[in-house]
Length: 148
Image: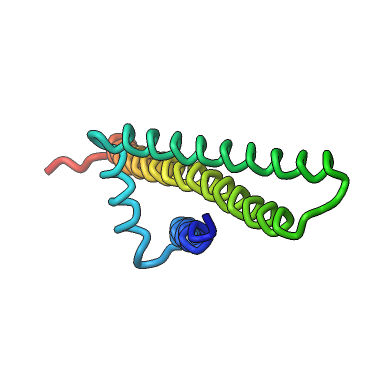
């Protein structure tokens, strides 16, 4: 079970990097947004939901094991060093897994808000152009015309 800590650290750091590239305007922002767009099409949402559900079940299982270890220590009255190591390791795994699931939710919301912001900016630009055209038409209609 200790082999799970290193991939979880890598997963957390990868998600933090993705979040930072989404927050700040970097050259990697556009490819990451395109990858997130494609992952939300077709079978992508089903795959991500089932993966997230599986990770959540693993998290609940680890937390259950942590409570069993804690109850065993309180029932016996003495603390076994092996149980302490297992407790610390599984608590670290649970915290990394929970943090990873939380960061996945943050990435999902950031992607949604960036898409909404892009749509709002396009509509705002369109409205500005139509207002400029109306102003030009109003100015042209109010100005006296010269007849020749």
